[in-house]
Image (cartoon, rainbow, N blue to C red; front, side, top):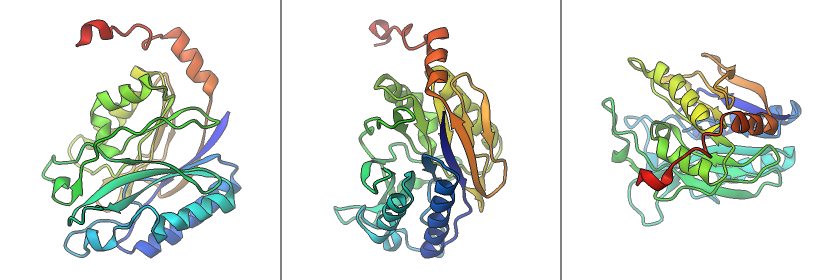
Length: 264
């Protein structure tokens, strides 16, 4: 069994205030003996276009925000998955919504730029965010191979399946899932579906309050909810097992029963 720490945050407009909170959570997760600490999307700051400039607050991967988190991961000997707003190297006024995996030695192992942008339900992320164009390679860890998605990617089963076919046993989905009619139900249903159809764990950390619905959850490969943080800000611990993944995929061999020869 492996322990992970799931963080459900209410971020503010103040980037430094949020970073201080993040570093405290990393330390607390380590003290709770977690191997992995998972944060939500937009952990860097709550984006309110009326009050802040996303371009002014965005940074590069080697900027002070991610560097501080890398140092905390190293000093606390814990893996960290989080997100930040990444500057466009081409110099546009838009940014990338980027997640990162930092290992317990403080090394940024991989990054993933959100592919699907939330232009729905009256929102238009493409006004200020650039779409990524590459699915990140699954990451080998002691708790299993981890595939990375971000929020709205959850609604597109193709990316989860591709990650699983490439070896992912755990899907991690930092999110800022917005409240709205049936939105919370969609959140729960989609996370469960991605877990069941791929025989994998789903770890989905979400923002709470502001315009977000909370309900950060961990789903096992059979679709059982093993953690639901409801509307509570803070940290919760869950345990996952590679044996559970192996048993589920042996009893329900969906990946073996695929027919890619006819899908095209």
